[in-house]
Length: 164
Image (cartoon, rainbow, N blue to C red; front, side, top):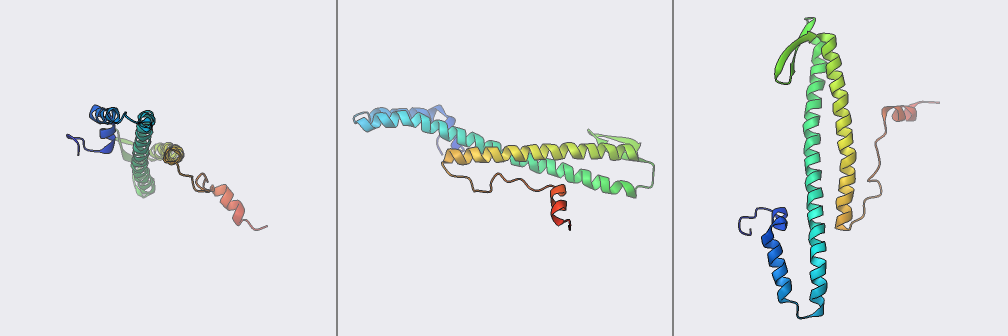
């Protein structure tokens, strides 16, 4: 740890690190290779910063997907519990308040919320693939051959299992 710096990204963003790197470059100006190193260092630091920022975005997107999936599972549980209710009206928790609505209205709300959550999760997953590909490109690695494959939908699966 360097003077209270807790992680690598914080270290890269500190003036202390830049001062240390530029002062060490100044002391080694005696040979021709040090000038190449001086020019390459800022580019390298920018690549490290970009990679760190993309990595943090990937982790944030993964956590958002997990949170949205929890909400989606809660909605799924509520949709399955609706037919078991004996009353015509049911209680829903909306924005911190309980609301009593018709069962059909509650079902419509939950289904529309479920569709929105599905679209958000799918969008995040697509964006996550692009961000992971960008991180891999910054690292200088190649993507696996099947990295950009998309899963088959129900219609496509149904056409596979249809008998002629």
